[in-house]
Amino acid sequence: MTAACWAALSLTCCCARRAAETTQTHYTDSVTVFTRTETVRDTVVRIAPDSAAVKALLECDSAGRIRMARLLEYEAGARMPPPCLDLSDNVLTASATVDSMAVYLTLRDRLERQVTSTHDRNRTAAVVEVNRPTAWQRICCWTVGLAIGCGALFAGWKLVRLVRR
Image (cartoon, rainbow, N blue to C red; front, side):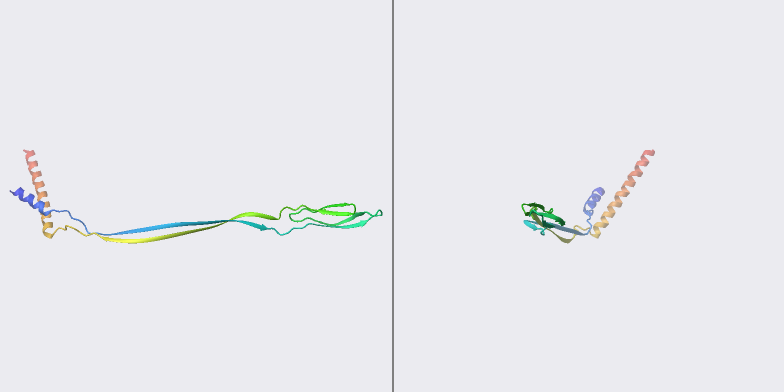
């Protein structure tokens, strides 16, 4: 009968205990958007004009033909060689070769933009304590614990006495 009372008392008194806490959670959402815009266009780049010069002293001889007496200046340009001179039949011809003075380029205009948006959120959740033991249930749990401890000591004492005999 006593064992049945102890068992009934232990089953009605003891229950699990949950602690009450407040939990805080921090969330961060981050979104990064890269925007790249590229425009292709053809462009003509004009180069400044260039020139070359020859300055010479010409004279007539006794036969009536023109000849070059003296070369005074002979100047080449930045991208142009000095002219070639040809004096034949009393005609002076100066010729120079010039490459194209325009350069055609393909240009690309790139515009890159980076946009980052960050959203922070804090969420606090309160944990509610459910099935909190009453004062009477706590007293019963302590009593049952002490009874189990005393029972274990008593069983150990009986076991030692039985072994010594």
